Image (cartoon, rainbow, N blue to C red; front, side, top):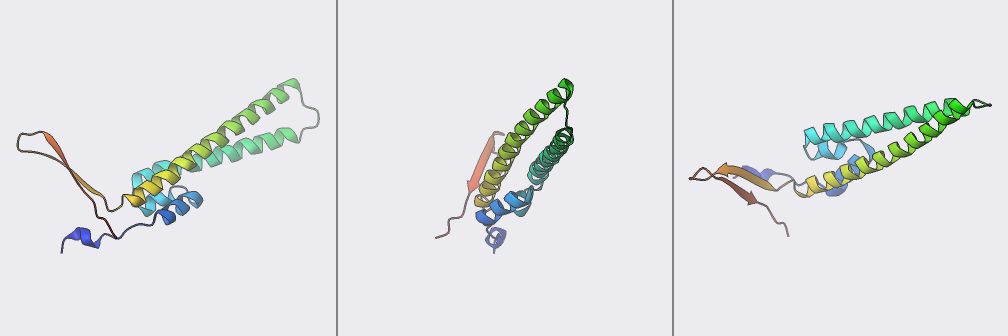
Length: 130
């Protein structure tokens, strides 16, 4: 039997839920390890940056009488926190959609090769279940 008959389909729901709760989890589930490292690393870095910014903001908020310089720092941290939140939302959304697409295309095979004249040719195949 050809090897492609043994490929097990991946659940798009599982991939999306993994990416939602584990940074890069859906990419690792669909065996896209490089993308998992990139997306998971970006998500982890952004979460770390957000927590660090919030801790700095909390330190300034504990001060009773803010100097103009401290007020400026507080405003900058608030802007930075807002920007990080948008980046987190963007990267998380991209990760979820990417995991969904990877799970849907898990059984999709493609082959890039050269034809007899030396020009590149692409062969695509997919399996339909009904």
